[in-house]
Image (spheres, rainbow, N blue to C red):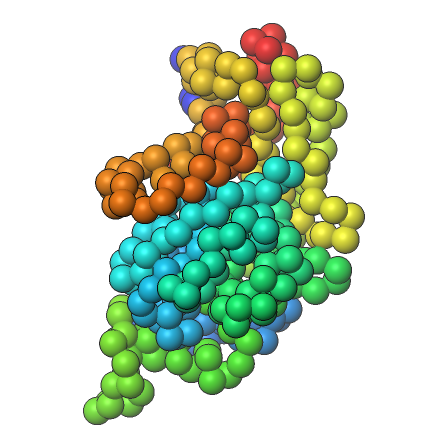
Length: 368
Ligand code: T4K
């Protein structure tokens, strides 16, 4: 049997570009707790992403926890989406916060500001929205709701590396935004992540919190955690960053072929790309298959094509959330449920050969 086709493959920098940096690390023996490559990656990412301050972290989940802690959101409820990777809600639970779910918009995959507003009570302490698949949320709508109630607004931008809207980085939206640099992301450091801060003071707070709260050798300023990114991963990230524009361009051309091949298949819907004023990163290729999604998933799997149902089940349907939320007024979230029950993410990564992509689309046409 042929090797399976995965939904994604990590985009890895050429080994020869990494080697000189690895030699330097071996010589200096500075492996972690900050170092030359860590400082360089923070600077280069801030420049590339066109944002004021980047704090690197060990992963996207810890990035969310650090952002919540730095904004002083330590108890109460946070309104969020059931349609995301489970880490979004896990970060709230680990932070001692109670997730309250609101539905997503009927068009698209992100929180609907009106549904968010319906869930606000005196217990609400923040809003945590997700730019699912790198498609921007309704940022103006969410800003309006957050502003009306004086609530901090955090974006889980794990999928939105490099996305720009109206000529500006999407990561500038909200009080803070977080990124994941997991191996499966558009830009990866194997494991890793970042918090995007608006001010130097906030960056310094995140930097202290990710290093146990240390503000100096003999002083801690808060209950920090270990969320540092080591020098090896930073060197890998520096090498990977040189190739990320090419990787996104390649994703764009594969996305176009998928749209051309699948746009007219009656049994499925290809969601539109984000609006024209958005420079997207083509992080995922979701299609909606309202009838027989799971059958299609299984048939493709038996052909060695491993698509993924990102995000099924809904976070609210996973144990332990079902039990944890049993006493809460359940949010019905019909739009999120419809998306979870019909979405299928097709393989998309820069070195996916076009021939393979066409084999996938031929099989989908046959099975649909
Ligand atoms: N918020 C959002 C919205 C997120 O999507 C995520 C993570 C987070 C927060 C948390 O960020 P991190 O703490 O993870 O930094 C994956 C990733 O583990 C996860 O990072 C990601 N979202 C999520 C959407 O997907 P799985 O369980 O689907 O990964 P896995 O191991 O099944 O990988 C998918 C495919 O990728 C595999 O079939 C093969 C391929 N693959 C994967 C890895 C890891 C490779 O070819 N090589 C590899 O090294 O969760």
